Every structure is written in C-alpha cells, then in structure tokens.
Length: 281
Length: 338
Image (cartoon, rainbow over all chains, first blue to last red; front, side, top):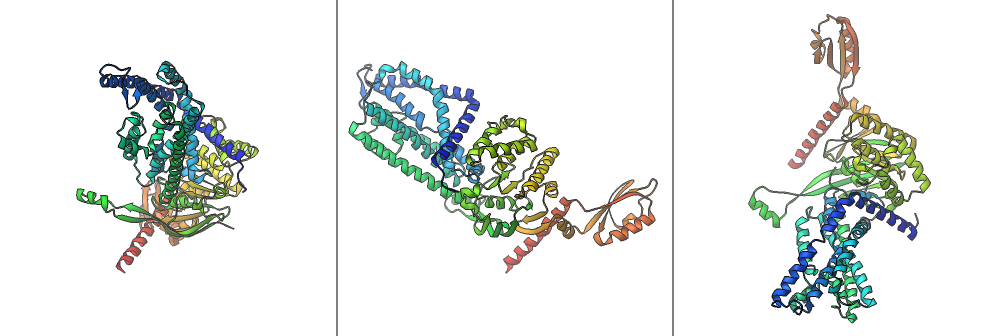
C-alpha cells in the first residue's frame, strides 16, 4: 500500500471529528447546563477580589494596586484566564484514558489502523467545539458586561500572540493530561495522581491569581514550569504584562515545552503498550 | 497455505505478590515481590487458509490471551507468530486492514450513536471504496436482519442485536482472518442460533479463516471441524470433535423406553444404570460392550424404543480438562522434585 495522501488523511480526520462531535451532542441538554453552571463562580470571584482590594487599600478600591494590578486589571485578568482555561482544561481526559487502559477498552485503537493519540486529540477538538458552541453566548455576555474593566483595544500582534498562545495552551493541556492518563499503564488507578496534578495546575497556571502576585523567588521558579502557559500567559499577553519584545521568545519556549510533552506522551504510550496486558475478557 | 503460524509462543504476566499483614504491606512499598504467571506456555499451532478453528478451554486457560497476541494487542514474552506473513504485535496498518477481532464482552461501536455512524467511520479508517461499503453493508444487514436498526443508537439495542452490529463492523472491510472471542456470550438460544447460522454461511461463502473461542459447545459443534483444546496455557488436544469424543469418552449412553408393565429389574447387572424413570431407563455402557449389552436387553426385555448416543460433549470436555489438569500437576510435581 502506498503512502496516504493528505486529502485521504484529512477525510479520515474529518469523519473522526464529525463522529466525535455527534456523540458529544447526544446529551446536549445536560452538557449545556453543565457548561452554563461554570459561569456562576464569576460573580463570587469578582466580589472576592473587591473585598481583597477593599481591605488592602483601606476602602479605596479604585486607587489600590496589588503587584501592579488595579481592581479593574484583576477582574479582566480573571476573565481572560477563564478564557485560557476554556482552551487548556481537559475535563475527564486523563481519567478516561486510564479507565480505558484498565478495562481493556484501548484494544479497539490497537486493532484498527488508526493512531490512538491522534484519535483522542480529534475527539478532544470535537469536545471543545461543542463546548465553545454553547459557551460563546455567556462568554460574550460576560465580556460585554465587564467591558470597561478591560484596557484599550490592543495591537494586532497582541491578538496574533494571544491566538497562538491559546492554541498552544490547548495542545499543551491536552498532552499534559494525556501523560497523566497514560501513567495508567503502570498504576492502574491514577485518580490521586490526577488530583495532585490538578491542584498544582490550579495554583501554578495562574488560574487562582496572577502569578505576578507571587514573591520574586517563587515567581521565577514557576516560570521554569509549563503550567503558566495554561492560563496566565494568554491573559498576560492581552493585558500587556508581557513586553512586546519578549512575546515571541515566550511563545518559542512554550513551543519547546509542547514538543517535549508530545515526545513524553509518545514514549509513555510506546513503553506502556509493552507492559499492557489487554485486561478483561 | 498456512495463514497462521505460531511457534513456541509464551506469554507471562508479572503479578505483584501481596503478603498478608500490615508490616508486610508496608514493606511491600519498597520491596515489591513479583510472581510470573503463565498465560500461554510454548504454544505451537498452524492454521490453514479457510479453516474454522475453535479454541476450547476453561476460564483462564489462555484462549483469549492467544487471540490478543494474534491480533497484536499485547506483546509475547517469547516465541513467534505470523498471520498472513505479518508479525501481529508490530501492528502494521496493512495487517490491521486485513483482520478483525470481535470480543463478546467489549464494544467497538460508539455507544450513543447509531451503528451506521460507526460504520461510516470504519469506511474511512479502513479506506473501503464507497460502492464496496454500501454493497457489504446491504448484504450483511440483510443476512443478519438488522436493516431497520442501523439508525438506532447502539445503547438502545438488545445484547443480541448489538452483537450482530459488532459483527457487521468487523466484516465491513472484508477481513481475511477473523478472531471471535466468545461472540455468543450472554445471548439467548435464538440469538445464539442466528449468529451461528450467519457465521457458518459467511465462512462457507467467503472461505475466510476464523478462530473462535467459546464456552458454548453448541457453537463449536455447529461451526468448527477443528478443535484446539487449551488448558493451563498448553495445547492439550488438536483435532476434530469426533476424535475428542472417541478418545475421551470411553462409554456410550443407551436410552431405553420399556414396554408397559415391563420392570427394570436386572438391568443393573448388564450395565451401569444412570437413571430409572419408568418406562424410561438410561444406561452407561463401555464402548466395546454396547453390542453385547443391547443383544441381552432385546432378548430379555420388552422394548418400545431405544437409542445409543455419545455422552454430552460438555461432559467429555470437562473430563478432558480434568485429565489435563492432573497430568500438569504431576509434571509440575516431578519438576519441583528434580
């Protein structure tokens, strides 16, 4: 059999994507409700930051700054980091992969002429598509309502940088989560490992607060880890916290992380399969 | 032409040896003790193109492990296997396009989607030309009588219907080799029969090679001329069903229907009596003795009807398993003493 042409491949990918999307939409009601509920914490979070600024500034919320962030910056940061998370978070990925390993469900990827990792990635793109289709409404509403918290409309290269950072965040989040799931080849139960990972992720990605609030030593240490690209980095680009001349440098580092994590996932997968015993049945 | 060649195939699993007690459990955190469990030990087997072979064996005998090795899902510990010239665990796409594996306990179809959608995905993945795809889908859904179910989400189908859908999924790319792991498990008699009929017909028409594992003797009786009995990871027997019966059941079952008023007294002296429910009596009779016993019975008793049968296959197979287990234990004991 000759090499596969790109149109053939694209057609396979498209069908996998479409099928996965159709499956996602089988429970659209539940899915939509779950998605919308995730917007509720925004309100409490904004009040929390207001209280923090109020306490820190002795009542002068408007003029108080924390590590260079005004109250408005902080709300904008929070909303933008949510946007980053919308790309980089992978609910259920690691636990599904380890479950499929444990229960021998991955057999189907092994006997069919497909690549499991590629298949899962396409499935996740479909997952995200369904999510954005539902979340775009509430996202637009929230950003509209909080419009005056945001700084002036940024330059084109900031938009480009942010777009790239979001796409990379998606891929980085996917492969990091996949690695945790693939550890299931060694430890059949990864839920506590996953819990530790999510906890680290929550703090170190900047989801909880901007990383600039950390003491210098810790800020620097976190800078050597890949987590900041999952939430902090895209938001920081938009808010102008990343100097223009360093934007491409940081994107380059992120790309290196991405390559490293993809390689790690491939190695884990290949090694894991050697150990795999096709459980069940 | 040999389509499947297996030589000295061995698969061991390393199993973590748990010790009882808290101290041992804590020590286990640092020093893990492992034990090797043999699933398959040194199997040799050749299957010709177009054969329909049954793997029989008790639970944990190594049947499924062998199928998993042949479909490339797991790596062997040692030994070789070739299917159509391919080493299965190298998972060449060319190989994967030419075989299929159906596991009775696993789904390949997307649970929440109609089977049709999964088939369309298969068409792409296996690169089946559209006209072939449509023709095969029509044929298969006609044969299995599931045409009207193609558009229904798989989760809403009964177990039997689902298995039919799984079979279609496995056959759409017209594989040359088909591995079936307990395809009729959990099915009622009718569904089981339908699937048997279908497999028989399909195999006869296409002359594909099929390896089947099953616990149901009916499957094996209905489908396979050749039977390979695996026990404790070793091939215990390889031949036809008739040969199994000949060599492992030393007796025949004689069923008598006595005439009215005829007592069964004295029959126990002729042969072992299995049951008496007048007017019916069942005897067990060593193979060489059947003619002699029948002659005496016909002479001394008034008989309405009689039949001579082989004992139930299940019983023969169970005896075969037990024999084998005994032998293994002996050889193991000999090995440890040596």
